[in-house]
Image (cartoon, rainbow, N blue to C red; front, side, top):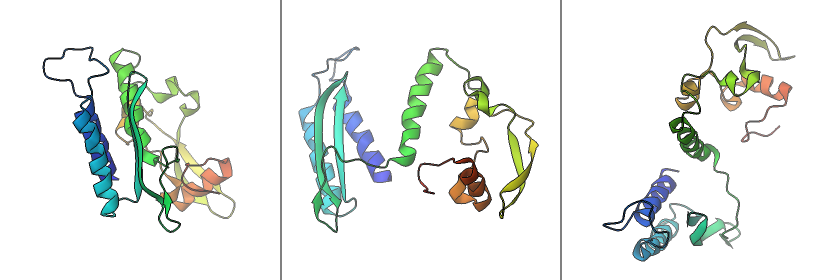
Length: 186
């Protein structure tokens, strides 16, 4: 995962950087062709050295796709080539994308980091803290939280909302409520 993040950061930095002397807004045709071809080198190195089985790179700016290629294998055992339209489970990689979008709204003054999330999602009002659970019937006891979950808590992963795969008691409650984490299946 770290390798993919580093590759993506490198792609964005080298391909989207302005040419010397450019001033915002940057010309969408100002991509560095050598840097774009460097994407090929990076992915070829990582797939050939078996550090990753395969991957897809896409660089776009202002709605225009500048570069889109697939590398390596999507299924090693079946020797299936990676395709540009293959679907990836990106799991927690949505967090930085969402954080950037949210911070753009923050910069526009649309919310405060200390706003309670119930302001945006009313179901988060009157949160409770789990005390105990009976795993045979998934009945539970809880007490009311004294503090509200804020946007800041979400950004710093300190909201107290847990993952079911980390706690069988919590998973039992999630299953009873029909809540999926997107990773586990039930």
